[in-house]
Length: 100
Image 1 (cartoon, rainbow, N blue to C red):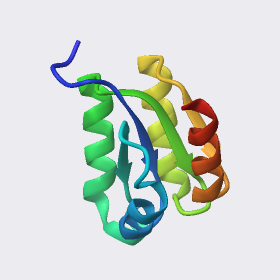
Image 2: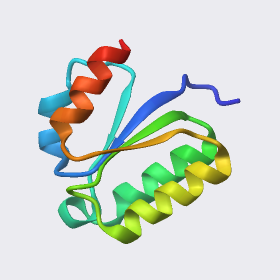
Image 3: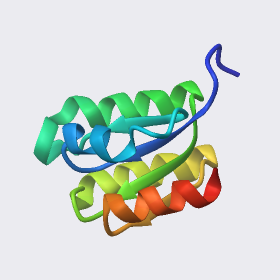
Image 4: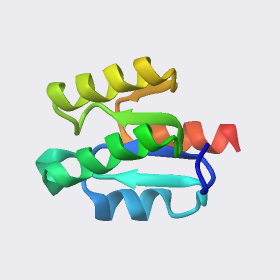
């Protein structure tokens, strides 16, 4: 149990674009992919998962590398956190809209 509420983590792409596309969703934590932002975002996501602060992960596979996606899926599976793949940030947005 963490002190902060669990959030939906969205991983992949350029962080600035993620912010613009998903600004309407308050319970979403955004993580840019390694190719656009460097290794720190992947490390931040994995740390948030380990800390129990993530209830679900949405991965934009178009912008995430195979190694990144594999690391995220492995940890999600181990922690029993749902991990869903999407082809675009727009698809993530549509899914989050339906879940709200």
